[in-house]
Length: 389
Image 1 (cartoon, rainbow, N blue to C red):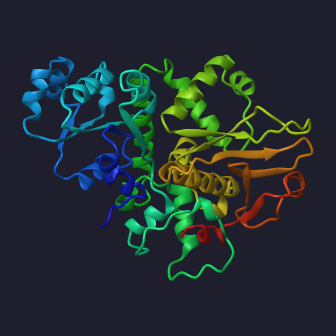
Image 2: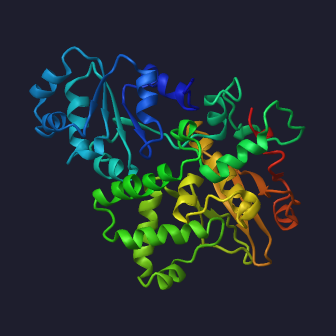
Image 3: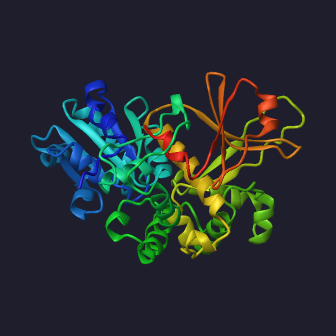
């Protein structure tokens, strides 16, 4: 089975373009190790959760490093955030072993960034890996023969979906079970997803001492899972969970930095009738979201299909924006008259609006009147596949 990912080429070409450290960040179990071992099969792979290995790096002794590296010219330090001072370790290697190509990985971006940003300023290039895109999933399962991706610079959904496979059946599976790579083999596995939430994601954050109250964190995540695609009021959530809004903001920022959720902010202008400030929150993976609310029911018997599809499309575009270094700013639009657009892409003063409707809908006249030069599309379950090229 081919495990190619959309970001492969950027990773493969890194050292042909840069001498800086290749930093690969993303949640656990999204395939960072698999990708690096496939792309760099001859690298010396050192895992930080092995005590003797960790002890050598914690010594900060260049001579011990040299003995460990021997003649290796390409080294991967896996799960660098497990070290007490990963930035110092990476800097020592970068400065004292100029002939070595160094790769570091971390499962929690907040820890990697907080502990390495100063030490590696100007010495690293960051890449991100998230759960599979829809195109990656179809390619890895052999459903399609070519890895397809969304072309953000030429978004277009005109045409007819003509595929030999059932696009809607594949979509339904992803809306319920999400896109963690292990589920290609495990299929619909509630136990795997529940374990991923409780024993991996929350454990990682707690071990980093970023969150003090596991019960509050879990309850907050569950509440956010019920509110995907809706405006978020920190004060209202704080009241429901009997805490203060500062704690809610802090925990949401940590969830975001750990790539559990992401926030979408409103497109603002100087006009008085545009609502500002309140974000919407979505999940990077819908399997995680559905596990949090313990709902893996079929779409036919649930009332959140529209929100699931909206989350799915926006997360697909978020991933592509990261992988392709497309540098689009992403927003939603809403004014005081109730006119709303689910997603607006902005780049070089040009806007593209996506109205995301599971079963169909029409373009928003309020947005079109305000931004007549913008391109606008209605994305549905019947035409979304046309975005992939």
